Image 1 (cartoon, helix red, strand yellow):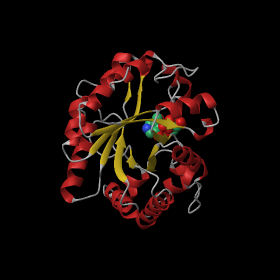
Image 2 (cartoon, rainbow, N blue to C red):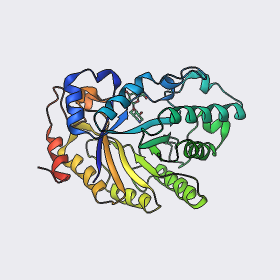
Image 3 (cartoon, protein in one colour):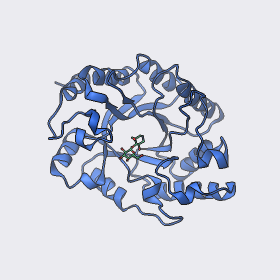
Image 4 (spheres, protein in one colour):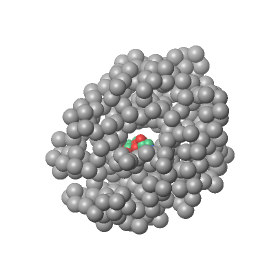
Length: 292
Ligand code: 9MR
């Protein structure tokens, strides 16, 4: 009943080992970089959807659904956006970016990471500094979600972040307060993505509590970028079981296919080795999902 997805890099689609595993094992795709602002709007008003279109085309040809990643993020953001200082201008630029990209992909995206990584790592539980935060203030996240809903009312709208898996962390609590506030005021939000980039031990003991606590606010939750240093089978099994134990945990995405495809390849964090062979963690995930 859950989807199982992976991040995909458009440049690897021509690698037959890669695409064979992709189409055999995964029914959800997140573009690893191709839908980010530096690729999609490298200069103001000039949009480039070709790399992401290649992935969407692959997905529709193979019956895979898509997560859109990501519309508003402080990173992989072009300098022309970072240098804006006028609030009216930046608000217009942000809203135009959201409406143009979402409109291009209307009907092809199951869920959008509307805003990515907006909270700080400093233990404050507050938003991080960014051009959006510094010029537009706290309201920029709400503005982005409202614009997204108006553009494509049938796409699920998610907030996505890392290091929000441990329930007692200030960052987790900060995101929780935001979602609770959005729900109480009718700001449109449908889901929260927990990136789940874990160390060797896998998820924190409280991960299921975190997932169920957010779900109780009335949002779906997903593991959106799962990878685990050294990929212990137990750690992967625990992460998957934490999701299965929460009714509103609707799916899991791993952040790449083979270890050699990973952004942290030195830690061998994925389910397939460099040759595309299944690792023990693959079996642990399959068994946890009820397969054999
Ligand atoms: O995996 C992505 C890598 O190829 C890029 O170089 C990097 C640039 O920031 O982004 C990586 O993906 C990130 C994702 O978009 C957001 N969460 C953290 C991921 C790993 O850095």
